[in-house]
Image 1 (cartoon, rainbow, N blue to C red):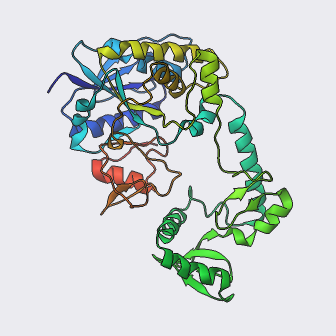
Image 2 (cartoon, rainbow, N blue to C red):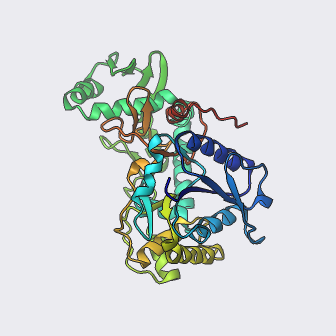
Image 3 (cartoon, helix red, strand yellow):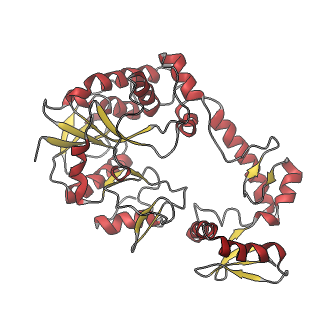
Length: 400
């Protein structure tokens, strides 16, 4: 093989190292390229398994998260002159023998894949502005009132009920077919009080109870049952047919976005003109070599400066945005999505089944990920995405 290498970085808790060890085992099954883990072993609760370890002492003033980011943004200084490195987050899992083809897509100075959302949606999570806390307060207040009037609120949500997740996919398929949608909507609004509207896969809507069912199990209590009571109590209204909760100002209660990151970068680093709708880069997978040193050094320095600023959360993506725009790389070549398929648990339209594989849009299109980025709910055996990971890798998690 050419002079290539995969790199992981980890420091600290056993949970993160178990995740890493799973990722290493999955990668070894499909790759012929060496794997190196960069770590500060004095911080680690359990050992790294199955890969060469490069042990580097990090400053004692850093917490484990900061130490990992420090090592990650220093990687190009650790590689050989002719080497191309591929960094992988510890929750990025190899699924395909195509993994080694990623190195052929390197375009200097660095090559990343895009994130799954524009910058404005990431912004509240990058800074300690008030937006995230205000959002949690507003949503929490609304949901406390909804719970009073909806006894199924906890039981029938997409986090705890897989049948409710599938119902959202049924709705999505229904919206794509106008005649089927009309066939549903007419009795929904004008049918008799005793009618039952059949959907698909044993799902139905019973007008008498205003509940959606899978067979005899209630899987969703429609807002028609309680939206007037909620509005009377807090002023939030449920819109039809948009199916959104709007506050007294007409804003979507469940939409979280802001422009503070773009403004914060301008104020702290002097980088102007960042587009808040830009599809920013995801730091979970990227290619680098020795030519990457200036870019990565700048990213490292900005990140260290952010560590000392309480307005900035301990993350590396915000400072990555600053570095990209400062170097006018916002239109730089990106890796294909298949090299960093970001699996969002909270979007039911991102799913998997054994016959069709993975999708981001409820099987309007399908894709075969080379790497899947399971950035939350890692190892959740009730999630169909994780079921796909285990079936493809033939590996099981052994987490407590």
